[in-house]
Length: 435
Image (tube, rainbow, N blue to C red; front, side):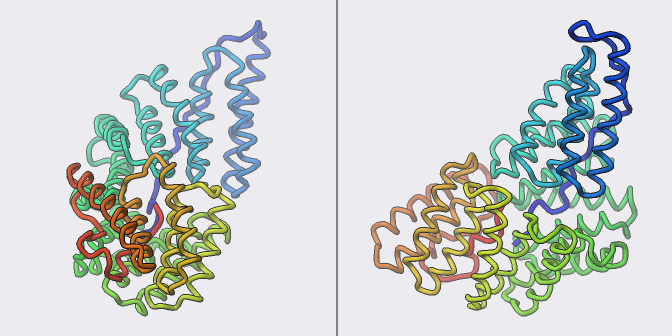
């Protein structure tokens, strides 16, 4: 159960204040100067408020900066800067629909003002891809990341930190899609770049090692995973404050390496420590806290500690419902996890409506048909078998086989669901971490 979008970096596209030359609607030269001053003040105020964690007020200032930039002709650069600031803030809050809206506006503006091969265009491409992936979509994202990566490699060099940022996101996409060999190649290169540019003891290296280790965990290469995670944890604990969110990421992935080996009691303290850090660093209602709650619950579920797990799942769902709405793919995954828990207890009448609700959300998602859909259908098929509805179960299993065949035709390297053993109870049938 991986940390969601571990180590996500949405680089700001902030530039020095620009001269807004001409006016709109007969605006006087004095009016232009006032607009420039107000734009700069709003932008600076938004930055200060964001640094303090006051996102609601920061958003108001950034929106005001956007409006001032829109007031005059020739203010495209100022407009891009203001929109970019909003994009970074939305990304940090995981407000992916809002991020998508901004990225789709910035991208054509940047291509017009700076050209298709400018770093600002690369940042807009990366941010658009991240916004779509955050909403559960995977189709078409590789092309966006690869275009952004190519721009940054040309401008900054193939071994630059700027290239590594996009390479990390590309590697995470591969991992989410089950393309573990491709993910390993990308994330190994991230480690190499950071070791050369930042030094082997840098905290960013710890995060990169943790990301790569999780790929090895999913490949069942546990010895390699634990070797990297031991090193990552040592670096993180030496270089990061005890309550830093990146330390929680390393702890989470170390817990996952233990869980996938069936070492549930060893995994639990790492998961709980990661949760405590997230709650303190981000507040009790943050989406990353919901993911951490889900991960603790999953570890409890496979130990058959159902009462404890149920309470954590419900708290995670409450956070997702409040922050993202009830129709989000992440909510669907957590609903399915709770449904699986009920199914394992024989509480089929409680489990089935949750599976149906999760499937309805999944079918509405742009990413429907991916590995999360496979896990969801598998869990529901097991419930149907448990309630002696063999014909219905077989129909779902045929859907699973068809999806697996389709994904295999797209060169997916590995699948976490073995369709030959659908009826067997096994921790790997968990819907796992929401994506």
